[in-house]
Image (cartoon, rainbow, N blue to C red):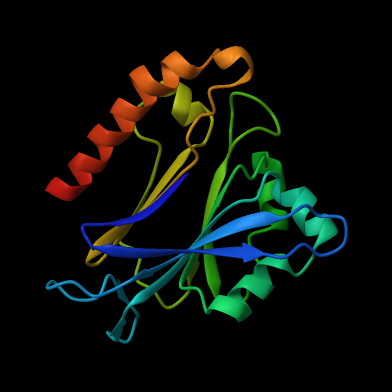
Length: 197
């Protein structure tokens, strides 16, 4: 999965999130994004700019995670003081989203659910309430990926925040050709259009 801000240079660090109860170990990627010559990528409603603190996590079913660890997302916010949390493989249907929109106080949320299959794929972004969102885009212009809810883009005043759940090649590598010959090219092309804006 990819969580990136364009065109800002990022420094990446990996953190391990220890399991609570029966939940298996998950790996969390935390990214500190430092101000570029153009200024900070995140600007609050009062105009203040600071380096961004981003987290990305393949939750492999948000409903299951929250059922087993009700405070898992809040713990991330408390531990890492995240400006944004990007989630992949949420596996939510659109009818489930209202149950999760207010799970974090002081965060706005953006959801993209699979319409291709129930309980499959999906992405979400939680962003601090005081950050200025200029636009939200869902998808990359690829019918298959877009039906699976794989990419959300948030346009901020000085940058873009993109979360992506890259298709798995699958059992027997049946989707490898789609991933390498279609999806990766479309995603690269999409990111290039963002850097050109």
